Length: 62
Image (cartoon, rainbow, N blue to C red; front, side, top):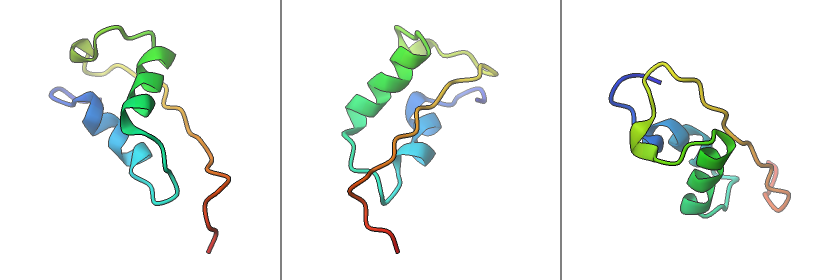
């Protein structure tokens, strides 16, 4: 994480995947809960976040 990054900036590369059909707000909530963050406006620069990865069993495999 760098100064000025928002939660959206951080999780978009993990969420924006053609195989994921998750609700964005649900995924953001999972990231906050996993990292014990109560206010997404107070994430510190340099902090390392745990990012959940979910496998979509219904996705088509090329």
